[in-house]
Every structure is written in structure tokens, then in C-alpha cells.
Length: 394
Image (cartoon, rainbow, N blue to C red):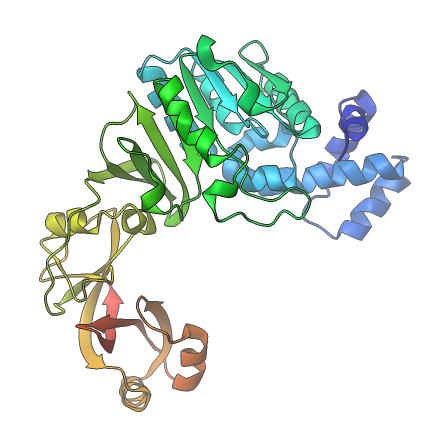
């Protein structure tokens, strides 16, 4: 996509092509291209419209019905914040008194649009000309162009002295190849600039990859890990006056939001496996809040380095899955295969932490047959390779 193609898509002819392409999304791409060309759509416009239709179809999971009117790129969609997460972040900024916000590296504008919907005046900065133009088009499509404007430029050169808050989502993919950048010091804008924003603006939020090393968290910042329906989707650093607690895990499950907070430095007690096993949500694990969850569940770890918790009774919690354990045995393929065969187990889910075994290979090696099902947990207990057999607690 280039600026000319984007401009063409925003003409009446382009709009008609997008409407036609939307009806073909999800089908055979060659047949869709042929159908558009047969309808008189020029090949270049047809290709651009079909690409947008495909991206919009994929974006529904992140943006809901609003995806149908957005302009998107593949890298931009990958990094864009889910609407439910962006809306809550915007509400928190607004509640903290932020009325003007600089979005440095605004991408396609997902977070900026959420802030604008919350009544915050947003000044977006984006280095890529096409992405900047798409963000402006998305603001216009949402009816928010008066609250969210975009300039194409260097985020590090933007004057932040005139805004109440700053949001920064540094690029985590290399230009051209699209490969992920795992070292925050290689982000764009640079990590030193990003973390230095909190010294200049008292309300600063930085979106980061969920694999962020805790050692890189700035002193005094609140680090939040976010999960949506069991998937770990992002992390954010709330700096300056926005920091409320050292660590937070925020989980979105259907229409509900759950938050677990703590120091991130506590350690859970260790003990032998018990009747119920809890598998904490990845956001809880990454936030180093397993000890806080253990205290809520009256649970212990089976191994100090592995985030499975054990308790004597089941407790309903949004922060972990619960299994009722029937067997705990040192791992032996022969013994496990015989036990499952005797019980007629033909279907298993395999969970693992602290095990070098590959679930797919183990499933083949077990040679399962039967109508029953079971959950297998591959782990270590007191540093001994162990398998636990159980059933989910509904």
C-alpha cells in the first residue's frame, strides 16, 4: 500500500471496490480478484481493496464492528491494541486528569481513537507516511478527526511540554522484514527516550511486549500485564503519577475485568502436590504475582521455580484453571501408557511447565485408545520429573 493507493480507496470508486471486496473476504483470493476485475475494478485498485477486506476481516476480533471502516496494514494490525484494552486504558488516563495526550508512534491509531472517544484531545505522531495517513483516515471514519490529529514525523522531536500525558507504543518489528525485536533497547523510538518520558511528563504510559525483562522496568513504575480470554496480549508501564502498585495482572474474560495486584517480589510457600492443581493465567505468571494468588487460594508450589499451585479444595478464581488430580507419579512412559490404557483413555490434553518433553511426541508415544479423557500435567516436583493425571474442575 502506498499513498496513491490509499487515496484511491477513499474515492467513491474505491469505496465501491471496498464494499464489493468485503463480500468476498475469507474466500478464494484468486476467485475474488477475478470477480472484482470482471466487475470493472482496475487491477491495482482491486488488489488494494481485497487486501483491506482481508485485514478488516481479521481485525474484527480486535476492534469489533468498527473494523469494517478502518484502513489497516499487516504490521500495524499485529501491534494494534485490542479495543477493550485501549478503552479501559483511556478511561484510566481520563480519570487521572489527562485531557491532552501525545501518542508517540501512534501507528494506525487504535489507542489514540480510544482516548479520543474518552474525550481526550490526542496529538498523534507517526514516522511512516502511509501509516500516518491511515491513522488520520481512521479518525475521520470514526468521526473523531476534531479530537485526534496526526503528523508524520520523528516522535523524539515532538514537544511534549504542552500535553498532560504521553502514550508511547514503540515499534517492535524491523522495517522491511517485519521481524520481531525482542531487545527493548532496539525499539523505535529508542528505549532510553521512551523511559525518559516519565521524567518530562508526569502522566506517561508505555506499551511493551509481554516478555519484557523485569530488570528493565523503571524504578517507581507500575508494570501491568494484560490477558484476554486466556491469551497474554501485552504489557504496559504506568509511570509517574499514574503508578498505583508495583505489579498488576489485568484479565479480560467475556464482559468482566479482573485485576490482581502485588509487589511482584513475594515468594509462595513450597509443599507436596495436593488434590487440586491450579494453572495460573499467563498474565499472573509474567507479573510475578503467583505468590499473591497462592495466598488467595491457600495454595503452595510443588517446585519453587514452576508456577503450578496445589491446594486441598477447589476455589473459583478468574486467575487460574483448576484440575482435580487423581494420580501423581514420577514420569515413566511405560507406566503412564499402561495406566491410561487400563482406564480406556483415548483423549488427553497435555499441559507442561518445567518439562523438556514435547506434547505432540508424547501423544504419539502413548498410543491412546478408548472413550475416556484426561488431563496430563508434565512438570517437576521437588526437582523430580513428574506427571499428574486429573480432570478439569468446571
